[in-house]
Image 1: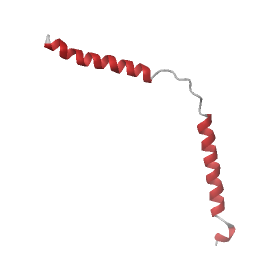
Image 2: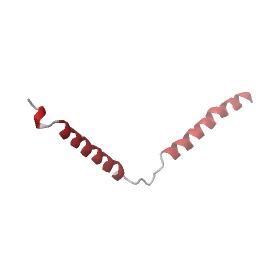
Image 3: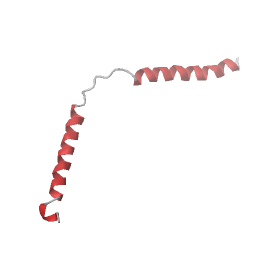
Image 4: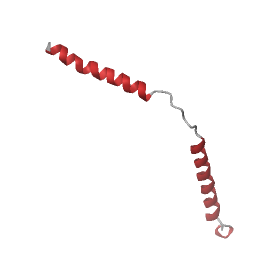
Length: 61
């Protein structure tokens, strides 16, 4: 009987892992990548502006 009790531990862990896996892998209604892409575009534009400000014609020798 004690062996059956010890077998319940991995059995319950497997059930818990299956439930967690199904919850973690569910289909979510994502808003899309629009917000992230817009933020990256603003970042890239800001970096391009700062790069052109640092290199002025008088600095080039």
